[in-house]
Length: 378
Image (cartoon, rainbow, N blue to C red):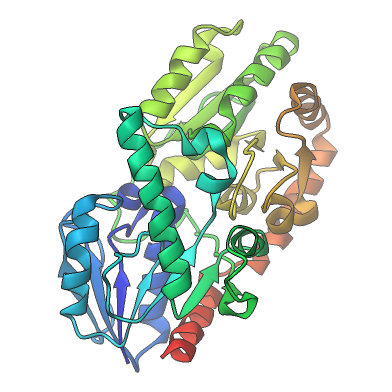
């Protein structure tokens, strides 16, 4: 077969943490396991050179089209159709409406449908945002109905698809879990490691974006209460610099907590992330909705105990290797912080369970299962 992959989100630096990692690891693993099929990778100028080819059956094509844009919808299909592919894989829902090539699509979550706050969060004019949001729903529906196969990253995501789109046959959707990246051994596509430094322990950690459904304002408020009891503890929020994190920094000025006790680490490298994970006393994941929850597994791999919200996919993915709290219950969040800080034995038990839990998630397994989807869709 001749298979295309929309790899414009390749790598966490360009595509964002979870999505970028997914595309990067899928391609890296496919290059290792598949020497039969031929692949065309469609990349952006920003990550074209970062995507190293290690398999002669893989080739690259540069496409300077950003996702979620009108240009993407008008121009991407023509470029992909011109490649004369048997199948193309879109690792996200943004499939061009006029595409003729058969395709499979990965759905990571339906948060824009599930979470009103996140779906309305935008720096754009409200009218422009409404138009784009309606466009999202049209494109998503077409991606689901016209795809040959649908990959969901969790059973929770599969059930969300069936809830919002009951016309989709359940057997069209296959759940394929993501893997866990060993950040200690970064890919050669990343810049040389710096000498990362972590804040003085003890500190709690969150890694990821700051969209409203991530519930970071509640986390900061809960920490402000906790910090009155334990003023030596810091909270570190690590993610990509954007308007949402700027909003959190403004929120910090209104909290009754010393500004130095909530630390923002923007645009960390993989090596810096690994250092942050390894030295953290506790990883906190207060999100109201998650399709998978990869950073919590990265924390477990680094030996960091995890406490997470008790909803969406998180109990499915994290199992008994995490503590849980209701994401809107600030008192419960504070209680978890107190418990985890005070109980060293509990933290070690969570660490041990985390090491066992991450054995269930493998990028190699993901690539093998995804390849089976390609073959069944052809």
